[in-house]
Image 1: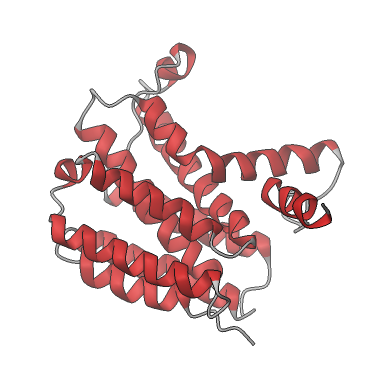
Image 2: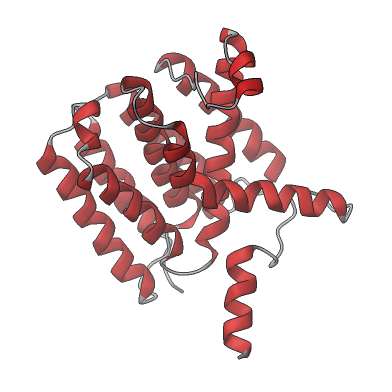
Length: 235
């Protein structure tokens, strides 16, 4: 009977904190929360329909906020990214992978919150928030909220659910893409490394299920963090 209320607290605080920064960002935080919330409450039980709604939201999110990944330092990919349509497609693809990957790593208490809290801390510690024109106090308050939710989550007082993982990954993905867009001196490898784990979980899961001829949208317990947890518990 642990409540899935983490996403509600996170969304309310995020919309308040980031409304002055970007009204459109706050709107999409609310919209992606709604998708996760109706999934948490089993009002949206179809994975295909959920992914379709996610895709439509992220398409508008990328277009309205002009989010573009224009450089990766991989020659073959950078050649493709010179095409504006491929830039848009690639940005949408990366955000969808990140959002769903973050939902995968939410299978263990504290993992998803701890991971993205570290990303926000690095943005603060390296003064990267200056590129986003975010007030330092605002970012500190947001980190306090994340630590508070982490403590409750690790002690089984609340779960983040789909809604919480969608919102937090969307915020972090947006911040890191914008940081790279606004400062070309920041290596794209740095951005990729920060977001690699949840993306790896998603991509590896799809590849594994494809090899085993299983549905890529069917849930299982063979994700990396779950295998590590089962191994440690067995020992």
